[in-house]
Image 1 (cartoon, rainbow, N blue to C red):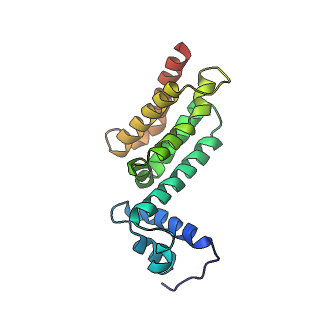
Image 2 (tube, rainbow, N blue to C red):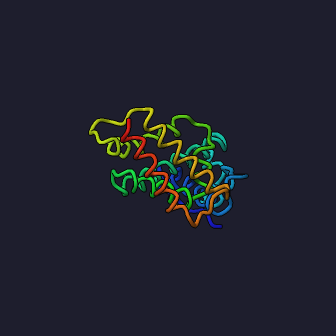
Image 3 (cartoon, helix red, strand yellow):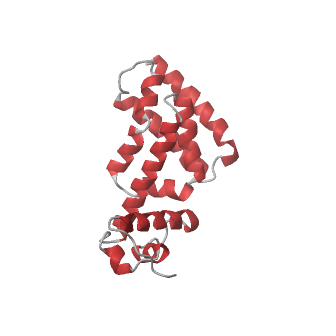
Length: 178
């Protein structure tokens, strides 16, 4: 693949985007700075200026994934039902990325996943105040558990929308009772 020139600051983004595409196509296993650099059409040395090791690249792809999840959830509005559908839909549409996001071992990233849910949890509780930590963690646990079961093949992915609706109804009932 011929090398491509990048403007200052664009190379990092290009390598992360290439890495994200590699994760979607091939999964997380074996993702390296070298492989992402080659896919982006830049030298390994140039990419190494932005990523000291493969773990830094994986973390950058996880951040990109949480940004994408946040955008999907935000586009769904502030109703818990729509947010849950968007969250589960994102996981089912991006299984390797979703796994990478939560397996990256970065607690700040997992907290970002909970923050995208907080407005919908507050709306489901029927209050304008920010969602309590416990309520947001409850919703995050339920949705992540559902996504994990779907991605592991323990539940049929074809029923993901139905399952998200059912789980959301149960969670909304629990939140309303609090």
